[in-house]
Length: 85
Image 1 (cartoon, one colour):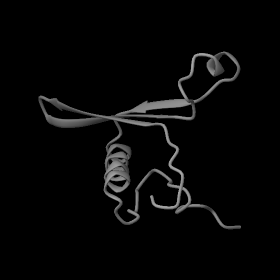
Image 2 (cartoon, helix red, strand yellow):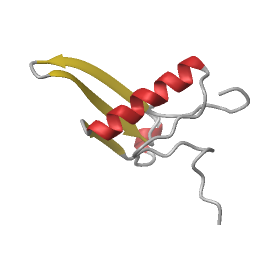
Image 3 (cartoon, helix red, strand yellow):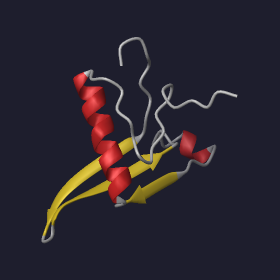
Image 4 (tube, helix red, strand yellow):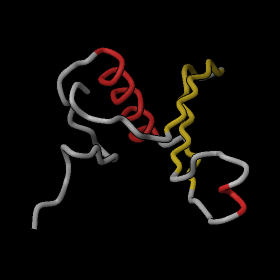
């Protein structure tokens, strides 16, 4: 994202299972730092939801390829999905 600071905590694991490929995603507000974790609480979500997995996959493609903004189904991507009052 040229001109924008990228700051996200998204982990995407793609695993081959008996029924095919499956995506596991971890989204978090935390920075995984041992000192700050003692000061405040962060939130995290671990999921295998297909739509969120597809969104995470598209997001990584966009970030690594300097591609155009991709419309996502479940995730919001700032500054492209900011609510304007």
